[in-house]
Length: 190
Image 1 (spheres, rainbow, N blue to C red):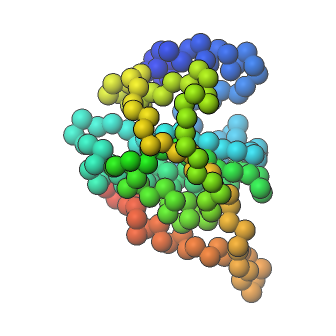
Image 2: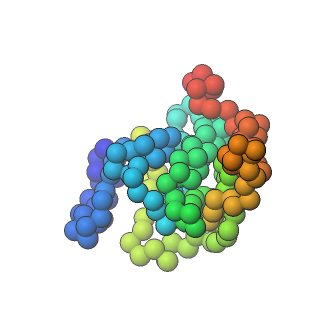
């Protein structure tokens, strides 16, 4: 599907494969930690540049239903990436930090997933030679979107775990808090 929607990606994909990189398609962040090619590997860094839950002709970026869909996507990414990163590894997400994207509450979603912010750095496209940002979905796919007020958030797994009497770990931030800021896509009844 990628070469169809983003036809300009063909040369980049060929270069990655020539370099011996594993290129996977249709990996879902909701269960990427169970993907047969990924589940046995621990990574130093896992990066998700500009996650987006999709474009719908009847929804606008400021609509609360779409914001909740974005939050669900990012929360799922944090939850599964946490299982895939090495002990001192990092989980990165690059997003716009202007309205309405700043309403996604990326840092709060990470905290609810048991992650702590290590660093927040400005995303500068010139630091990534050959990188071209593209819209996802079926609406205006392969078109660029404005890269203003963009940051890469770098998170690590919280080490401040408390131990229960049975020896199991409990993280200080309760994952139940996540329900206060997102509603799952299933609950949205789209």
